[in-house]
Amino acid sequence: MISQSELGRRLGLSKQSISKLKHQGMPVESAEAAQAWREARQNVAARKPTPAPLAVAASRRPDPAEAWPPMPDFPDEHRDAARTRREIAEANMAEMDEARLRRELIRVQAVQDQLALDYATTREGLIQIAARMGPILAAESDPAAVQRLLYAEIHQVLQRLAGASEAVMQVDGAFD
Image (tube, rainbow, N blue to C red; front, side, top):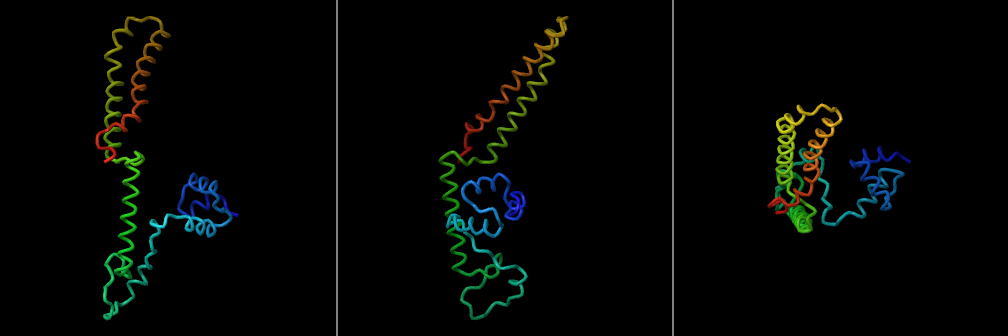
């Protein structure tokens, strides 16, 4: 039996993914058994044919009698394999469209734009503390009161940042 981290390394999965799959019944005694289990349960539309190794494909000379020449990116791929790849891609796109409709898939640019806005707002809020609080703190002689006032101002700015994760869900076009 191998460790979950070693199994994850061999399968190209994170520890969290291995743990989740293990709870779903994936065997963890060997990478081969785990891979076979995953392949047996994989979405049929997501099963992509494994391309031939490039060294073998490059050494292969095309047969002039072949009706359909191989495609340049996939040297041994012909019309039927290309059609299968296209159908798989269309199925994947349909799944992504459904995920967007369920609001489970969001545009990366929308997240980046919202993060930039939230970081800029937080930065400005923190910079303004000195200007806003300077005169008030200068008049204060009690260190504990100064600390309370500063804490309240910083907390207010950070509180706006804490609610930023919901704001990204409201970005126009985030789920288009």
